[in-house]
Every structure is written in C-alpha cells, then in structure tokens.
Length: 414
Image 1: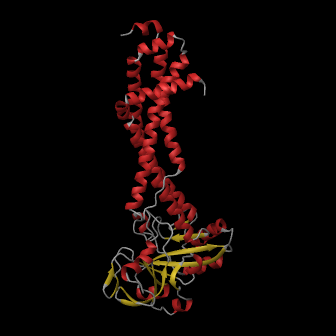
Image 2: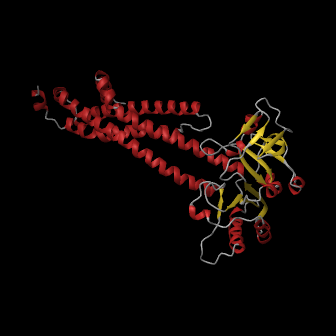
C-alpha cells in the first residue's frame, strides 16, 4: 500500500468517525438489506438441507408412484388430481413382471388422510398421530433406523397381525417415562402391540418429519381394518445404477396397466428424490427472489443515503479539497479519498447486517429447534461484497464531483 492510499484511508475513517451519528443513520438501510438477504439465505439453506437428508433416508435409488403430486398423503393435492383413479396393489406385480431394472417394490397406505387418528394408552392420548401401513419389505427398500425393537415380518403382514411401530415423538407423548416397547396401544379403538420404536428421523419439511409422529402397521392389517383407505404409494427400488431405466420402465408399465392412450398425459404421479428436490428448489427460488427484492429496497435507500451524505460532505469540505489540490493532490487521490469513505460506510453496514443475521439465525434455532437454519459462508461473503459494491456505485458521483472542483474556486469557498 503506497503512502497516498494509506493517507486516503486514514482521512476517510476519521471523517466517518467524526460524523458517526449521521453515518449510523445513513447505513441503517444497508444494515436492514444485508440482514434480510443473509437471514433468508440461511433459512432457505437449512430447509433445503433438511429436504435432501429426508429423501436420502427414503432411498436415493427409489422411484415413487402416487395418485397425486406433492404431499404423498394427498392432503393438499390440486382438485384436478384428486379426481384421479386410485393406485392399486395389483400394479406392483405387473410392474415387477414387466420391468428388468427393478429390485423390489414396496407399498405404503396412508390411513389418516383427511381425518384425525386417536392413539391412546391408559392416562395418555395423542390426537395428531399419522397412521400409515406398509408392506413388510419396506424395511429393506426405505431404510429407517430403529431405536428399539424390530420390524414386522412377512408372516405378520400376511396374517394381518395387530402389531405396530411408532415414531419417537409419539412414544414420548404416550410413554413419557419410557417402557413403550411391547406395550399395548389403542389405535382407533383397536389394540395393537408396539414391537418397535423408530429412531429420530433425519431431515424433513420445515424441520419436522411426520414419521416421528407415525404409527405404522402391516399393510395386510390395514386392508382388513381400513377398507375405505385407498391412498396407496408404490416405492420402487431400482437395481444399482439403473434408476433412470427403472423410471422409464415404471412409467411405461403404469400407462399400460391404466390403459392411458398414446399422447394423453399421465393420470398418476411418478417421481424420484432428485425431481422432488428440484421442485422444492423452484419454490425456494421464488422465495429467495422475493427476499432479495425486499432487501434491495433497503440497499437502495441505504445507497441513496450514502450518496446524499457524500454530496453534503463534498460541499462542507470544498475548501479542504481546494487546499489538498493546491499542495499537489491528484484527481485520483481525491476520488480515492471519497470512494474509500463511501465504501467504509457501506462496509460497516454490511458487517453489522451480517452480525445481526447470524444472531437472528441462532435465535430462530433456539426458539424453534426443529427448524434447521445455518448461515452459509457464501451468503456471508456475498452480503459483504454487495455492501461494498453499493458503496462503490453510490460513491462514484460524489467522488467525481469532488475531484472536478477547481482548486482556485474551492479555496475561495466559504
């Protein structure tokens, strides 16, 4: 760093500190803008990490077939999709017989769609449990760790045994003192024996994984006890490295078995983990644009404030500028001094915005532990770079105006 540059920085910082109250008000918009950008980025990054982890646990090589798109339980499906025909258990055998890239097919039946399921034990009750039924082979298709106990067997599924696996949140709600394993629990008035308790699920939507509140019974049991439940999902496990081929084969088989004419659109939903994550990325992209638009207003206000204070500074220091030019200061020296002053203002605002956003993110994590949030380094770096860029952009005009002053006229200025 040469002497002139060092002198410019010292003069600029001295001026900012001398007018610190005015400078603080000026950079308030920068602080708000950077805080908004980094906080939104932190929350979105945390949410996406949770979604990716969630689908990795469901099985990255799996293909999912459901009646509707979006939530597989069907609670928020578009009206057009709600009129579609049901997915039938017989489809699994047809797909397996006509596809060569498939290892196995499991089935999940959503029982509690559109109504409350009461799960009770003496002295405790849960009204927000999610009841599902799965085929026995789902234990190997969509791996889920167990905290205690075991999964049910093919024989228990075939005999429609009244056994159940429950999520950790449900176990805590019903058995706060422990001892859930091998206990009896009432599900919709029928007694089941708890044979397993799932470990805490990884990832989820908005920090919550509905499987932590689930009661999972054998598919054969549900087909007898809940004949009205028809919301079935097929989970197709592809052979290693064959997921793309399996996707095409499953789609073709589904169109054949449902007799969809060539050229007509599918009346079912088929997806993979990557596709669902891409859909989520599009949604959070819109949220990100909205957040950036809001932040841009703050940055614009802050930038205009910086320009205003720098123009005032040029007017107030006209005589000083004249003296500096009279003793040999070059045009670039004057421009550099005022640009450094403008960048100092916005950089300080950027640092303050980053600190506030990190504190807000940490506070959200403390208040809502289930909501994943972390401040990514790229967002912190981008926030600081944007704050500096705002200083440069809005500081150029005042700096050029200061450098264009005639030294003789500047020395006469009172």
